[in-house]
Every structure is written in structure tokens, then in C-alpha cells.
Amino acid sequence: MSATRFYPVAVALVAALAPTVAFAQQTARVTLAAVDSFGNRPAGCHVKYFANDYDPTGKKNPDPRDFSEQFSPLIGRDIPFDLYSVVVQCAGKYKGSAQIWIRHPETFFVVPTTQRRGDYHTGLTPRLTVSIERVAASKTRADNTRWITMSGLFWALHETDQVDPLYRVAQFYDIVPGRYLLQVVEPGRLVCKQQIDFLEAGASLVLVDDDPCTVKSAESARIVK
Image (cartoon, rainbow, N blue to C red):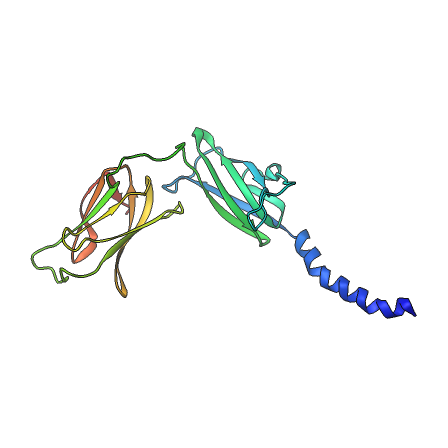
């Protein structure tokens, strides 16, 4: 009688736990791509570290496991769903790190790599100055509100500055050498977008007012054709 009475409760408990158990047992095929800040793929890359050392809330995992041995060279199999810290090492002293949240059976992730160690120190002056040159027959109002955004294509780096209405320049202090999507924006519309390679600090671009996609001159930067 007692067993019969508790049987539905036991069935309900198993049914409630089943999705959790199934989720914990799910694994993925993970494909990594290692690129530098210009999108080039360094040679000889391998996964040096791939461990669930933090849980999804950011707390330190007391018993992490490193799955790097299950990668060959950048494709991993049977990787359990979880949050991972990854380190990729390549030839030429290229190295990159990232955090990856594995939640799907097929997961692709780009790991940015660099040869640089430490911060990119360039002083207090802007690393890139973008000027918009006003021509005599320009149809653009001088007081138009415009801003320019530089978004890294292969790095998670994003910087925006308003075009100064008097001096008609925008200045960028935080970007590092790499390939960017430059966007000239006005309220309510995208004026122009262009791929730019920023090569080194002290760079400058001069754009034409009515057609900002036209670059009049460039120093330590180049347009990607």
C-alpha cells in the first residue's frame, strides 16, 4: 500500500531530474580558428589549455578539468557543455586566450592571437586622427552632428568619437594595430562604412565631406580594397 502510494511521487521526481541529467551529459564538437588582429592565421597553432576553471556565475571551479588533449590540433571532440577558458599557442610566439561557453553540439569560435606581450603604450596623444575635409561646394551642413566608430573585425575592440564641429576631426586613443570597420554615422542614418588597417600610433586619415568613403590621404593606415 505504501509503495503504491509513493510510486507517482518517485516517477515525478525522476521526470523532473531527467532534463538536468541529459543536459550534463551533452557534449560538443568544438572548432577553433586562431587569427591575428588583421585576420591572418598564424601557423602551427594548437590548444594549450581548455579547462572549465570557472562556473557560469564567475566563481572559481574547485575541481577543474583540462580538455586540451581532446583537440587535434584546433578541433575538439566530446567536450561537455560548460564554460571554458582557452589558451591557443602558435608558431612565431603568437598566443591568444578567450572564454567560451559551450551550449550547442557544433560550436565554432575565433580566438584572437598576438605576438605582443603587455599593454600597447603610446603616450597621451591620439593613436589615430580622422579628419573630414570640407570642400567649397559641399552639400553637408557645417553643423551636422556626426560621429565615427572604429570596430575591430578580429578583436573585441570598439571605440567611438564625435566629429568636432569646429575642427572636423575625430580622435581615437585606445585602438591597437589591426583591421577595423570604420563607420561614419549621423542621427538616423549610416553615412559610410569602410575597412581600415590601422598600422601604428600617430596614424591619420583625411576623408572627403560629401563622400567619406573617399580617402584623400592616409598615414600609418590604409584602405582595405
